[in-house]
Image (cartoon, rainbow, N blue to C red; front, side, top):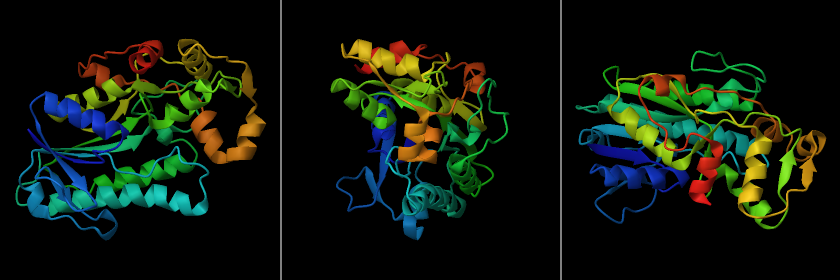
Length: 293
């Protein structure tokens, strides 16, 4: 396949493009600077600029663009950037597809498990309704922007959890642990929906040739508490794990970002992905952490 990827140089995009090329696919990367090779295509999502003729040449589009949620604090200005960076990129891609004379067969567009909000004790699937919080607002606008693609293009929106790899949202935890400052967040009993970086990219590859459409949860098959994750990182790195950050301190320092990123419990199941025959390489969070440490 010939695949167009936005966010190709990011944490997930780098792994995904490597896996796609290993499979023999041709990857075109969207860049906001001057292209440096024939595999790079210039675009300006903030201005809704993308030559629709580029879309005519590809079989699939994968959208991974968006400002990092791990950048803190979430100021009023940065909240706007979080939403606009996702909506503008997604809408630009969808509108270019709609204008193309030969739209792609599939559009895989990024999304996030923040849609579900804090839901302790519930089993959350793709059928579960939206929960409370800013991230729910983000996901709702993000996924709505993807709907502007042509009807004949199969749309898959991938709601991704905590991606465990060398970088991403787990990066600050690893950095603090390396300094001997590994900590439990709150009670440590909140469920963090995780997935290994390898499986995140592999699942997106799987969805390119699947018949699934609509929302698909990209999370690992076995749930894990935040304490299980952070304590295992410390044990695997042979570092102390003697600190605990109380909920009030996290909320005072990070406000709702602390609650939504660190203190929410989300028992999410990858129900549709498993039913579609996807096989996880890393079935436990310990296997995922071992893979990159």
